[in-house]
Structures are given as C-alpha cells and as structure tokens.
Length: 272
Ligand SMILES: NC(=O)c1ccc[n+]([C@@H]2O[C@H](COP(=O)([O-])OP(=O)(O)OC[C@H]3O[C@@H](n4cnc5c(N)ncnc54)[C@H](OP(=O)(O)O)[C@@H]3O)[C@@H](O)[C@H]2O)c1
Image (tube, rainbow, N blue to C red; front, side):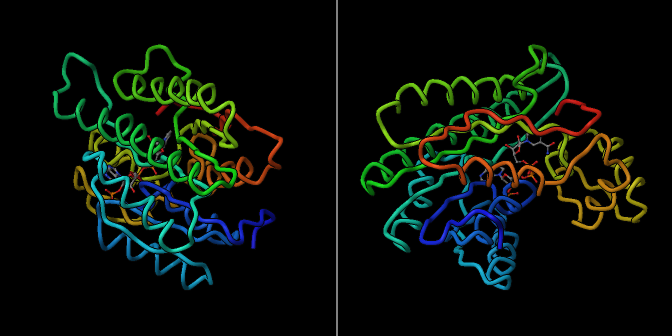
C-alpha cells in the first residue's frame, strides 16, 4: 500500500495497457482506488486488470480506440456505474512518430493529433461533466512530455505543447470548480512509445538489454527487455513507475494544494 490513500475513489487511465499508463493504473489501485483500465489491445488490457486484481486492487478493463473521441464516455460511465463517482481521470494514451516534418506522412500526423490531443480534449470534457455531477473534488492528470519545453520538437512535440496549453487553459476555466489539472512532463522512459521509431534504434535498445528478441516495427517489446535496457541505461532512461510516483504525489495533495506541472526526467536528459 502506498502512502497515498485513495480508498473510496475511482479513476480512469487511458492507455493503461502498457508503459506509463499501466504503472499509473497499478499505483492508483495499490493506493485503494477503483481503476478503469483502457487501451486498444484486449489481451494487454485484461492482463493489467489481472495484475491489479492479483495484487488485491479493484479494476475493470475496456477496449477502446480513442481516435473515435466518443469512446471516452464509456470510460467515464464505467467508473461512475461501478462506484457512483469519478475522482481522477488520467489522459495518458499517446503515440509518437519521430522524424522530419517534410518526410512524414499525413496518417502519422493524424494518429498523433487524434490520440495525443483530440482524445485528451474529449476525455477531459467528459470527465469534468461527471465530476461536476458527482459533487466531489476531481483531478485530471495530463501526461505531456519534456518535448513540450522544446520549441523544436516536431509534430509530436507540437501535440505536447498543445497538451500544456490545454492544461493551462482548463485550469483557468475551472478556477471556480474543485477540479485540479496537473500536467506531468516525462523525459525518456523505458516503454513501448518507441515502437514506431527506426528499427535500428530499437535493435540497439534490445542489444543493451542482453535479451535476444526480434524487433518488429509497430509491435511491443517484452517487458523484460525494457526492464533490462532501462537498468543498463538508467542515466538516460527512467522507469514507468517513476512517472506513476509523480502522479500519486499530485493526486495525494490536500484539497488546498494544486500541483500544476511536474517534470520527471533522467539525470542525463534526451527528449522524446
Ligand atoms: N516513454 C517516454 O519516453 C515518454 C516521454 C514523454 C511522454 N510520454 C508520454 O507518455 C504517455 C504514455 O506513453 P508510454 O511511453 O507509456 O508508451 P506506450 O507503452 O506505447 O503506451 C501508450 C499507451 O497508449 C495507448 N494508445 C495508443 N493509441 C491509442 C488509441 N488510439 N486508443 C487507445 N489507446 C491508445 C496504448 O494502448 P494499446 O497499445 O493497447 O493501443 C498504450 O497503452 C504518452 O502520452 C507519451 O506521449 C512518454
């Protein structure tokens, strides 16, 4: 059990089938919250729910593709139907395609804009409606990136700049509501966010892990590869759990304390 007590509260985490979202979902559940876990990969969603349940937590899983913004309502409804309330909504789902603007294609831009920005907007709006109806203090956590602090961070960075602008604007719009907005900006974290990068870079990561697995562009690497690679490269890459700790810190504050922005990065930072 963590030091933060979320007994009686309920949370939604988007993109909880992998990486940072999975770690956030597990730590929220370990702190006592009922958690709605969501992602596109049904097997991975079920696996996370099983992990939470096996650890003594409470969770349910929903398979959604957030590029259809109407799907976010089902996540909010799942939390409210199970517990009668929604306290925490974590907009974490995200995709990244690196590379130059001139060489990129429109499907990659669409995927990033729809997942990283539009779904976050839709999720936030649906969450605020449910939080207002519930009448309890609420907290929306947006997973941004240190790319939002870099003016030359490409289309992915532009989506994260958008996340920060949206977070700041929402904080103004919600100034008379007991609903907090926190923007968490991770540096490089060992996850599958790199599944769409140059396979040669991923092959280097796999080599650092010392585990021999094939690199298939667009597909996840096994957990043990990411864990071993992070341990070997810990100065430049942190763990998903390190970001989850920051989220717990923000949501665990007293009602009167608003943690607006958190940067969590490795000691030798590289942007992603
Ligand atoms: N890792 C880093 O270095 C880093 C740094 C800064 C910020 N971030 C941010 O952290 C967040 C989490 O990324 P991660 O690093 O944990 O990567 P990840 O392991 O690839 O996880 C991304 C999650 O988003 C979900 N997702 C992607 N597209 C979706 C869609 N259309 N509908 C529903 N779910 C979708 C994925 O679910 P499925 O696979 O099941 O579809 C997965 O659960 C992202 O917003 C990312 O931009 C990451």
